[in-house]
Amino acid sequence: MSTTRDSLQERIAVRIPIRREKLAPLLLVGPALVTVFLVTIGPMLWSLWLSFNRWTPSSIAYQEPTFNGIGNFAWLFTEGRFWNSVANFAYYGGVGVTIQVLLGTALALVLYNYVERRSVRIGLLTLFAVPMMIAPLVAGRIWQLLFLPGGGAVNGILGIVGSGGLPWLQSRWLGLTSLMIADTWQWVGLPLLIIYGGRASIPDSMYEAARVNGASRWMQFRRITLPQLRTLIAIAFILRFMDAYKFFDKLFIMTRGGPGTQTELPTFYTYIVGFSEFNIGRAAALTWVIGLGSILTMLLFWRFMDTEGSV
Amino acid sequence: MSTSQTNWFKWAGRGLLVAYTLFVGFPIYWTLNTAFKPLGQIGTFPPTLYPKGFQLDAFVWVLSNSRAIDAILNSLIIATGTTILSVILGALAGYAFSRFSWVDPGGHVSFWLLSTRMFPPVAVVLPIFFIYGRLGLQDTLIGLILLYLTFNLPLTTWLMRDFFDKIPTSFEEAAFVDGYSRFQAFRKVIFPLVRPGLVATMMLAWVFAWNEFLFAWIITGNSTSTYTTILPTLIESNQIQWNNIMAMATVVATPPTLILIAFRDNIIEGMTLGMTDI
Image (cartoon, rainbow over all chains, first blue to last red; front, side):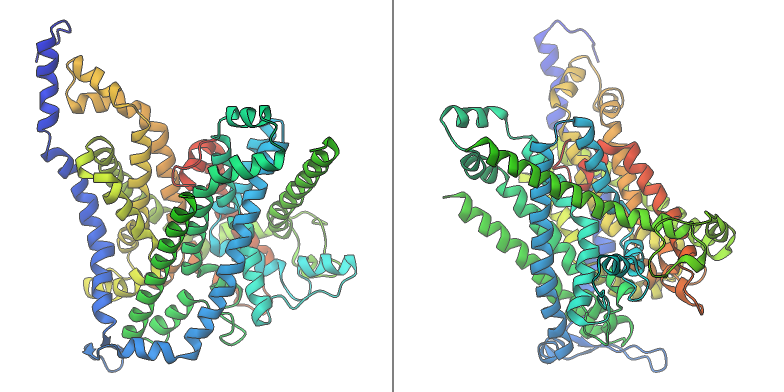
């Protein structure tokens, strides 16, 4: 191949092979797609098939899966323990995720607008990202220690202030709230970083133009900041909701679903049905209900954003 | 709007920021505080706010406990193995998605790949448990290394596509004009530019694998237990050895924290799936 740079024909001649590159990209993408199929899609399709079967493979009397139609799903919708986990999810997801996203948004805007020194801003952003880097299980362990009913730091501080302290992990709503606090500690950083990045990318000229036209701070917030950040706020909601559907590690270590089964969330309940009761068909049905719920949530948020954005 | 009102808002905002900073900082402080305390000062009222008689016994316990050491080593092997695999596969696919738009029309294929992360992990591990039973992959390091690709490969592909997208195609075109082949252009022009993003992607994939619990809890047995799977059972003794547990927490949380500090900008970009560029 010639390396002369002068001739136009030669430039074109060099560029032609790019269009012929059809095989190379497939070879590049292929291994990744095949891997995802083998470790994720394939097993999940098998689990979809299992969800229409009765299969309780105990080590004592092994039996093959037997088809039982929508029996697992029918069971699910009459099972009180499942609805208990759904109600917990509604509280945990509805209240917890909303607090996390609103708090993250407020902190991001304060950090951007009211902290002048860049080094302080970067330092705080890094500190707020630290909990996200710690294993959720370890975070759960730390909060378990903080929430100890007698001698835990949280009740210790409440005691110094003069309050009696609370039985943090010992009841349904307080248990869920404890999980929520621990999860907020770990994950507010995510909406915060997303919104901070979004706010930093709004050009100052938009605000200057608004000020020249006499817009108040509130109007600037209402007409510039909020519309510009709407998509990112929705994305933050979606990401946190996806994680709420998956919520497992902290629950496992902090309450184990207890007292009794009162603080169970859907993924944890699936784990119990699958790996403690070994009722695999039912557990598979549960995973698909949770998965579809999580996809539905995402679609709802996108739709909400579309209709809002078109106004 | 009057200045006094703006000032009030500013100071309320800063107050919130200070309160939140304390909220984030306190558990980190308390972890260290507990790890350096003698057991007798834990769970007292009023709480001991700093270790009286600073001691390293808990850390000595962690670093001389063969179960803890083995588990940390297993975590290290698994996280490193899965990182290497997922970054190689993800970088190749990410490059193709970024540079050959027909492989990824409208970004749908790469988004579909990312969306497999949205399904709850328990949906994957339930069938995998039985498949691994048949294949003899339960309680093996390689089994967990492969399983961790379910969440790491979509992540590395997505992030690498994002990092490649940031390099203008005109850079490569200039290289082609200079007579470079696509491979030469990649090696001499694109790779040096994408290297910081590649390193951050590796670090993130490593941290996610290092921190994983559910898959490890279900797939591993005694010989391959990771540090996350031994943490729940460290409680089993007459009196909970909170100082040992918190020393362990400190040890295992140190690598991810150092990674965050060392590769701050790119890690933050990666944590937010490429949305935030500070």
